[in-house]
Image (cartoon, rainbow, N blue to C red; front, top):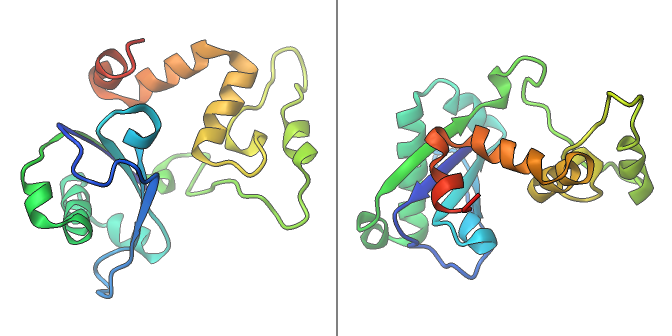
Length: 177
């Protein structure tokens, strides 16, 4: 499960690409937090909930999930820092509820060669292409962008960014597309 949070300002260490929080409390799910600001200077974080934390989060509302992430961020970075910032936009993406996905994601298997990922990119016909993280060896989030760019060009990235954001806020205000 992914939780995207756009803030009005950066309150976390901007020079770090990612953070990890593991709670000793079973009700507090562990999260991996990607620093979007590190990549493109947008004051945003992408929290990824995994394992049993997903099962806990699936029983919560979007607002409860966001609040739980904010509680974790408070413990990570201090309450005084987060108290002075404001969430401008949030989105919860639950792969487990999406038909044809159901929580699946790609990974690099032991013994996998770089050409294996590139072979997946080859079109089956002029109409069927594959793009995404599984088409870029040892990559994850940026692998999705690389695979999309490789097959469909910048237009695919532009469309993907518009689809991910509500009211195109990020694409219009942050990416200047």
